[in-house]
Image (cartoon, rainbow, N blue to C red; front, side, top):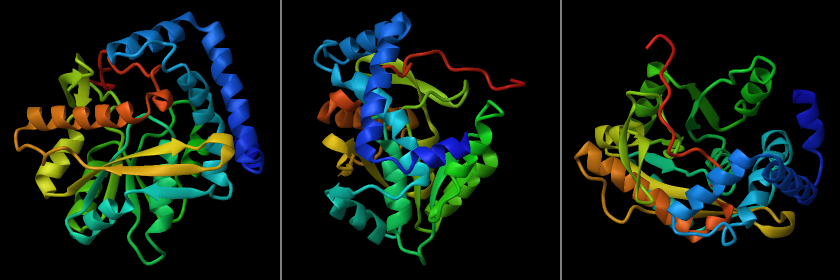
Length: 278
């Protein structure tokens, strides 16, 4: 599988995106569960399925572009409001980068990991090894790149992220990912309770880190990506429940910018799973 991904990484991004769009519509056609979830989640946010229909193709593009982002030459990436991110780094307080399941979140990791300079500390992200044995080497290889430090999704990994923040470094999370039972709180997301991780809020409150919200816009015709940097509407509250709700509101804010690239099929409102042995 890794050899196949390396071969696909040589293809033009425009062609990969075209193939991905086709993949997205094939899944739409054959999976009624996927279609139903897509429509329900869009409606919860106030959109008709027709309004966000381009997200079907973007879901496929998200998968098809991975070989290029993981193993190929870095596509063109530019920035919107990068000065806000630069100011966060300049504060010396550490930077918590929060990215939703929207657009190309892998481009955020590529850009930050590759843009801090060879002498800079790495960008630290949580890494959950693939559950399927045949996929594990591929995912592990994708996380072994200069400027990126992938840490395990356990207490050791969390401690490494806290240490990085206290050292004034950057760490990244997808806070709209449903955590295991006992690691989150139920908080509103587009007006409906969603089980939401507390990890991001806890680390920020513990370290005093700056928070920046990022999403990677997928540009048309394979022209690359534009990374958008945003800030929370108000400083993170000291109360954990309120802070978690603020982060959800921040994710909503990003989705509203471009709902056509959000992963509406992601099962955001599912019940949390129990960790093995729990």
